[in-house]
Length: 87
Image (tube, rainbow, N blue to C red; front, top):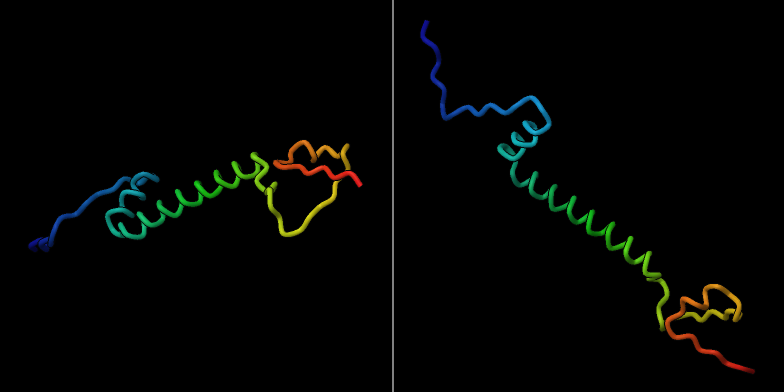
């Protein structure tokens, strides 16, 4: 009995995670590349939010609402442009 002919070529990927990723890039490259772009974007977003928080990012000089603080409040040291008014 003759063997059926194969059309094209067969690619053998490994049985590990790396083989699964290689097979994904072989079969659906658009989905795999966009997934990598999404992961990079999430990583950059997390890094940006971490940097924003570490640099006290919510301490804007011009705010829509004003907050009155006492002089001995520890948050006064972090203000960018403190305005002291004596009444």
